[in-house]
Amino acid sequence: MKPAILLLILGSSLIAQQITLVSPSETDIAKQHKLLEQAWQQWEASDAGLERSLFTAPAERVLARIERGRQHALAYHQQRARFLETVLNALQRELARFQEDEPQMTPPLPAPDPRKLDVLLEEQKRLAKKLSAAGLPKHEQRSLTEANSLLAQLAENIAAQQKLYDAFQHNEAQAQKARRALVDSYGTLIELLEEQLRLNDEKRQLWLDYYDSLHQLVEAGPSQAGPAKASQAKERK
Image (cartoon, rainbow, N blue to C red; front, side, top):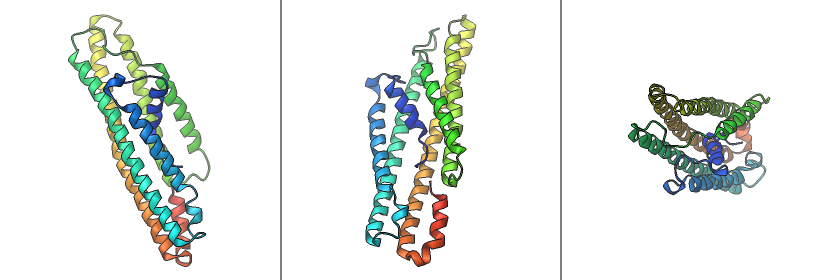
């Protein structure tokens, strides 16, 4: 199981339900999401059963599989960074247009679709259930905990946005106050996406180190790598 993909979930809900942050003509979120899915599938395929075959297949073949897994892990995290940047840029454009249109007393954007919040809440339940599973590797526990924390913050901000949009139906003073709060909310969402980009870089390096360690284990041979292999397996994913 690879680390949880917070923005993949969010992006897929936006696309499947035709909920867009900006006009489809102004962004390639759907294209980047499709490429991200493809990169994920290629990584999954190359990594399937890799650890079980470390010392049961010819070393040359295993080393080639490790290198393929390493390259696919690198490609996946690079594509994930592009996808996150695409969503981030879309939010930044929305915020800029919203701020430029400040004299208007009604928001120029459609109200947030509550289905986005439902998707995030469902994903929170799924991650909580997985975190409660016994014997979950430390690496995956850490990744799921980070994703669950960010999901909660995103859900809170989306719920807050819905309330802030509703506030625009009230008088001028309330609308101005809501506008300022809405700008702050966009800023928080942008910060969360920037944090996802930072975490993506960290996770990419962790996975590259992991494949490098597998390479060293295979080169060392089963007689010298038994204890080390068990330790690496515990830290896996």
